[in-house]
Image 1 (cartoon, rainbow, N blue to C red):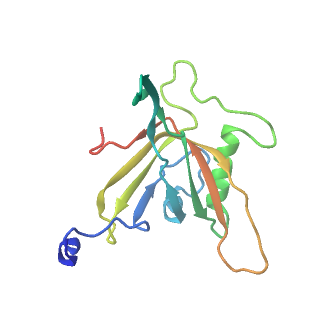
Image 2: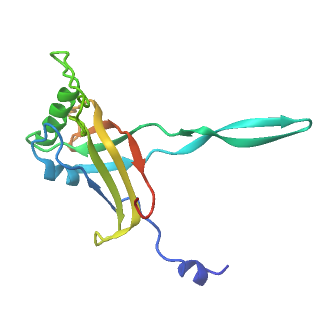
Image 3: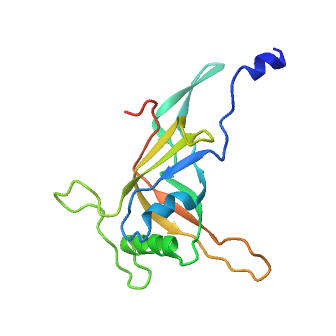
Length: 178
């Protein structure tokens, strides 16, 4: 294969070209800015458990009946000067499980179709112009599991970043989406 052939394969998917769509969530104070303050996002690995079948001198590996994927993902965001994004996530976390009061909200009430604490979160790969390029992941039924620690440091002037861990019900990663 020549460099000309490699060049003609097209551009690579780049890590910094993605959009995050987090719809308004319980407790959100500034839902629009959330999508622009996410710095990174990791799509969890997915696979299938296996088991072995042994027969005399050979063995075969077969897929089992369990998908191996954690039902959680994480991302980091830059906190805004007035802490609206952070406080929105904190409100959501306190709706799910309140730190001071020790109370929790029902996920789904009897006879209710939608959850009180979950929203879909979508990740879309894009080009430099913001045009979708084909990668799309929808984390259906997402809720905040953990609001990460906040660090301050007199020796640096970098923005405060906070990690969020989200739980979810189902990852819709089929192309096209079904």
